[in-house]
Image 1 (cartoon, rainbow, N blue to C red):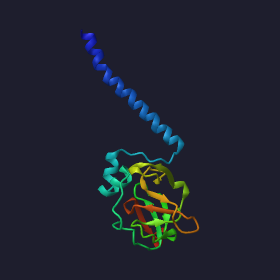
Image 2: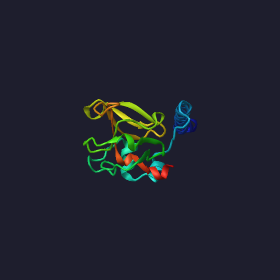
Image 3: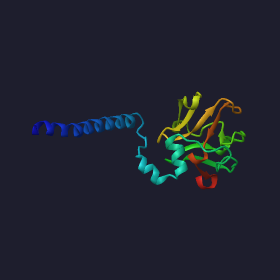
Image 4: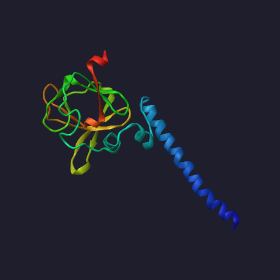
Length: 168
């Protein structure tokens, strides 16, 4: 009976060890694919982000239309990911779309953005994420101005603005 009890106690320990080995391999695979990938625990993200920033970037939330800091904001500069400080958009491509969120017709650095299919909420959309930290930024639509015809509709809380004077 004692040996059966010992084996029963070992099963959870072994399964935890095996599952954590699988996670490490998955993280290693992600990092090999993109060595600049930023991996943090939810607790670590919560320490550096406000509750709204966390909800939007880590839980794929959205801010209410016309409430974001950068919706009606047109200073010259660049917009960075609030999670990892990678440059995403420039003020030279920002335009007034009237949709209630900051809108851009092009991205500043293509290597910092990834687009994924989003079929949540009964819609099919193209989700915009940061390629380095996987932060949810917003969505892209094909109703923007020339020259791209795109509208990157981005949550203000996912962005950090740096004025042009601070960049140089």
